[in-house]
Every structure is written in C-alpha cells, then in structure tokens.
Length: 167
Image (cartoon, rainbow, N blue to C red; front, side, top):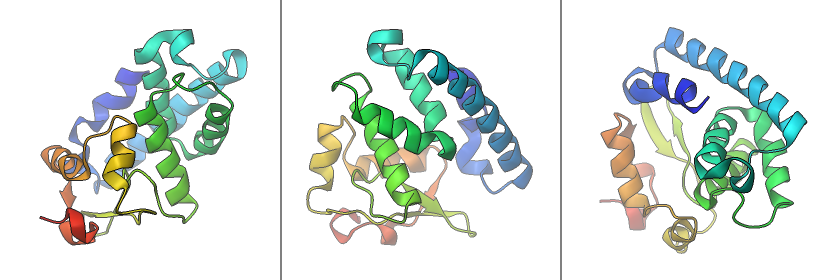
C-alpha cells in the first residue's frame, strides 16, 4: 500500500496543478483509504507492535492522504500507549487535522497550495517553540524541512514563513 501511495507522488511538486493528475491521486487515495478502513475495522490501527515501524508508517501515509480517516485515526492514537505510532507521523496527522479544522498547526508541517502553484505556510500556534516541538517529534528544523520540500519540486513562499524562519 505504501508503494502504491508513494509512486505517483514522486513528481508531486511538478505536477500538482495538473487536474488529471490530481483526480488520479484522489481516486488512488480513496481506494487506499477504503482498504485501510477495512484493516482498521477488522484488526485495529496498524501500530508498531502489531506490524513494525515500517508497516505502521505505511498505514499513516495512507491516513495522511485521506481526510475521512484522519480524525478517526487521531482519536484512536490518543487512546494508545506512547510509541505505538511514529511521533513524526502523529505530529503530521495532528497538524493536518488542526489545519482542516481552521486552527493553527503545532508542528509546522502543513502548507497550502495557491492557484499560482506556490505553497504557503499554514499558521502555527507557537512560533517560538516550533523547532523544539519539531525536534521532540523527530522532525528536522523548519528551515531544513522547507529545503527538502523545495528539493522535491515544490515552490514555497518564503514570505509566508514566520519571520524568524525566513532566509
């Protein structure tokens, strides 16, 4: 499932404005979400103790691309002992849910693509502690994260970043 999810995303930065490509991703995401939903219903959320770190991370990738699963899975993770889900994947999920709800994100993982193809940083709740929060989740500092996004072909509006993170 991870490979099916990630293979078409190899060119995401360059192709995300292509409407056919977008529809293909949405169809794939819906299919994978339905498959993962069956797994969750039958066995529970794939955790590290259940399927190992790679398997759990693969399941979380599917969740990241499916709004209908995100709130459900976030609620499931809150009832689990720490360490069953990657702190990085959990932080990204928390940010996605918060941003979707119109709230500031915590870990600074979310950007919104504008019609001009430029990605803008979604508001964050605590700029001063952002890199500390990222570090506790095993994420790179925000400046490095932005570099990684740009290396993947995404154009990031540096002016949308909090002032202390701008070049």
